[in-house]
Length: 617
Image (cartoon, rainbow, N blue to C red):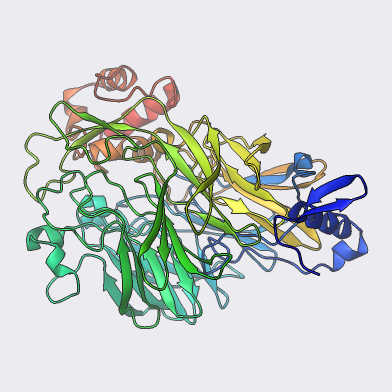
C-alpha cells in the first residue's frame, strides 16, 4: 500500500504524518545493532552530492526527534588561514577537503589524516579562494588562485598532472568546485570582475588536455555576439563561473551558472543584453556545443551574478525543471523542456532593484554581497520542496567620477550598509510559492542539505550548525562550531552510522564571517561521546604571510590585489608616505567611506599584520 506524502497515519490515539512515521521507523530499525552494522555505506561523492545538484540525502538515522543529540565526534584545524568556502566530498570512507593552497584526505569518521598536498603558487594569485574538489577514477581534481588546475592521486596525494588554464596577471583564477563525468572534468574561470573574458572547459581527466572550450562572452560569429554592441566591451566582458556545475546524465547536458558582466556597476558603457552573463547555460557535455540558455538579468549593473550551480529536478506531477538562485535575491524556476521561466520568488529583501544609479547614491537590496551566493538551492523529492539560503544585505550604489570608459575596473562604487542577516526559504518547486521562511541574525551562505528524515541541515556565518524541520522551518538545533560556516554541510553513512560534517572558520571577515576561527572540519554523530580535536601541522609552505591573507579577504575588493585600487583608493607607495603607526591609525579609525574593521572583526594583531604587508606596496 502507498500513501500520498501528506497522509496522516493514525496508530491508536496517536497520529503522525507519513514522512515522520517512516523516519521514526527507519531510525528504530537502523539503531538495532546488527541491522545498522550491515547497512551499506552512503557517500557524498560530489560538491552537491549528485550530478543534478539536488544535495538531497536519503539518510534517516538523524531525525527531527533525536537531532538534539548530535554532537562533535572530532574536528581538525587545517592550518591554511584564509577564505574557507569549500564543500567536502566523501569517497570510500575518505573525506577530501580543500583550502586555498592545500588538499587533505581524512578518515571520515575520526578526522585522522591520510595525506595532505600543498600547492605552492607559481605566480601571484589573482584570487585566493577554493570551493572544493571533484573525484573520478582514482583522481582528485582542484583549481588554484593562480589559474592552475591539478589532478592528484586519491590514495597518496601525489600530483598526476598540472595545467595552466588561466592568466593571473589578467585577474584569472580557478575557484569553482569542478565536476567530473565520463572521462571528462569540467571547470571554468573565476574573477570576471577584473575585466577578463569568461570560459568553461572540459579536460581529459587522464591527461589534463583541453577537449573543448565554451566562451561565456560570445564574439565574432559566435551565437549571442550581437548582444554586445561594443566589441571592446566584450573583450573584457566578465562572465565568470566561480562556484560549481550540474549535469543531466540522461541528456548529457552540462549546466553552469554565469556571473556578472564587467565593468560590474556600469551597463551604459557595454550596451546590449550582454549574453551569457547572469544566465544558466546548458551545453553538450561531450562537445561543448550550446544547447539552450536562460538569462535571468540582462545588462546587469549591480554585480548580481548567477553564482551557484543550478539544480535539475522533477515536480510531483512529472514536469522537468531547473532552478537557480541569484545574487539578485530571487529563486528562478525554469521549465527544462521549453527553457521558459515558470516562477521567480524573492528569497531576501528587494528594494530599488530597477532604480537608476544617481550621484547622490541609491540604497539597493540586495547589495553586491547579498542574495544567493555560491551555495544554491536544494531539493527534497519526497516532500516535493525546494530549499535555498540567502543573504539579506543592502548597499548604496554610486557612480564613480572618471570611470566612464570600458576599461574601468568596476564602473562605479558601492558601500555595504551596516546590518546583514540571512534566510532559508522553502518553496513549492512547481509554482514558486513560499512554504516557510527561517530568518537568521547573520548571513546564510553555507550549503543547504535536506534529508529523508525531515531535516534541513545548514549553517550560518555566526558559527552555528543549524537543523530545521523540513515541514515547518522550525529551528531544532543551533550548535556552535567555533567559526563561521560558509562551505559545505554534508552527511554520509559509514559502518551503519550516519555522520554530519561541516566546514567552520571562514575568515572572509568583511564579506561572510562574523565568528572567529581558522579553517576547520567538524564531524558530528548521534551520542558521539568524548570528541578529539586535531591540527594539521606543517602547512606553512607556500602560504602567504598572515597579513597578506587578511588583506586578501578584507581589503582586495576595495583596494585591489596589489594595492592598485578598485572600489577604493590606491595604496601603492603608502609605505613611503606614512610610517607604520600612521597606517595602523588609518585602518583602526578610517574615514567615513571605509568600513570600520577594528576592533571587530580585525583585532589589534590583525591590524599590525595588515600594516606590515601593505607597507611593501
